Length: 160
Image 1 (cartoon, rainbow, N blue to C red):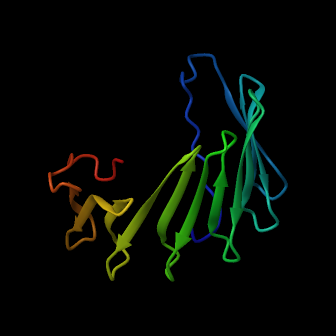
Image 2 (cartoon, rainbow, N blue to C red):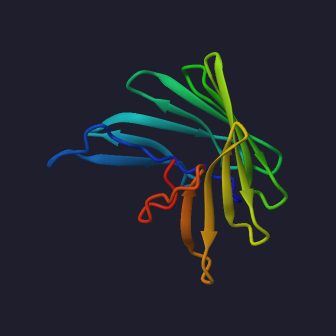
Image 3 (cartoon, one colour):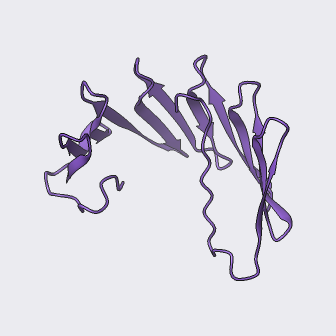
């Protein structure tokens, strides 16, 4: 996320069938401002002066997710309409090192640990190991083990 531009991934419950259309709107700075489905605006996006997405609105229900950034344009906080909140921490290489997630009265944290090559090597949840990653000489994920040491699916190295 070094550029500071948040990438939004939209998932449709029912993918558009034949004849359905999905359209996109952009502002004068070529930033995506809306996603339309069959001519109706479904999602809209607002930006700060640095080009960071500050709000994503689901036009169908009027709910807005807000995003705020630190002085280095790194995502610092995500506030969802259901009062869930996620805080992000980074290391000197701009890699996410921690996510603190609050969902209602529940909260948990995820820590991300990296090797000297900045490769993700371990994910912890509330201090407990959840995943370990090893890499081959070509810097590709060679294996993923679950926190209990069992081997994870080899065809999906980053499932969580």
